[in-house]
Image (cartoon, rainbow, N blue to C red; front, side):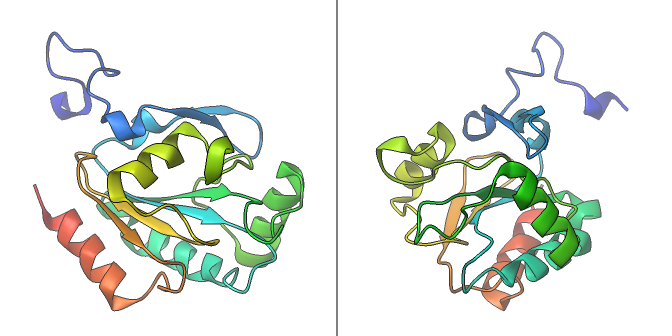
Length: 174
């Protein structure tokens, strides 16, 4: 039970990996601190509802269900940055994700992930990896400590062995 708390003398906020030290609204406009995902293997994905890669939502949900009890989470960040392929409101995006893919992993309010309007998290991810998203469904895999970040191009399917092998390796690490 003691492992659920920050070490003595440190607040939970201080224990938050810097890459996760952000708050974003979810699709229901509720503020969510990413610090709660510290200590987990995190897959961040910029999503879109009208993209050729949109069927990857299915694979992302399968990944989440397969590994969530082992300390893994998928975080979706809908963005309209590429080809105007996420034109809907947050409510429309939430309905789309639920009705078409039964999404249960956290999905945040529509945001920007590239350029001068990119949210601070995506600016950090691009800076740390040298790989800003080039299209929808670009993936960033972050280890439990928040220090190691690996980027995967949009064409890498969620259930691709290159990605799942890396997830399993990070989940097995202390």
